[in-house]
Image 1: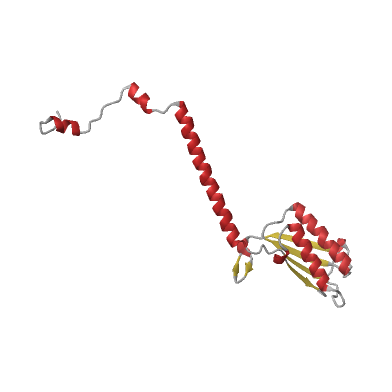
Image 2: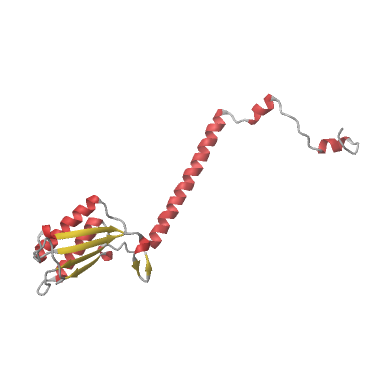
Length: 183
């Protein structure tokens, strides 16, 4: 027996569990059209959130991007006295920027001459280079860079293409410093 104060109103206010009939349950279920429309709405909401998130990521990336710092460091056993090093540096800088697809304003080229170096057991003109970049490197780009830099060294410093190694580093932003911080 239920406890109540004896009035009819108190029974109406007391919630009681009553199993629903089959027809009541079916009334609560959405129709197929409603399910499809609801699914489309949910999919559209998810798409909008995803696009908004991608836009935010793009904005964040653009803000902190700064220079992408391709840096070409070349050492050679060739004496650079009497060599127009400005022309070598300018051509190498332009070549790296064009091949990688980054602004030349962000490219650094270092050229060191008269470095004791042997290649293949001889001290004939040779060179070793390293190119570090945050992104922009892949097998096709690396081949183009190797060919371009080797051509410059051959034409400007008389270093045969067969006596030049170039090592590529695709660096993480946190592994390279600039402007008193890291990228």
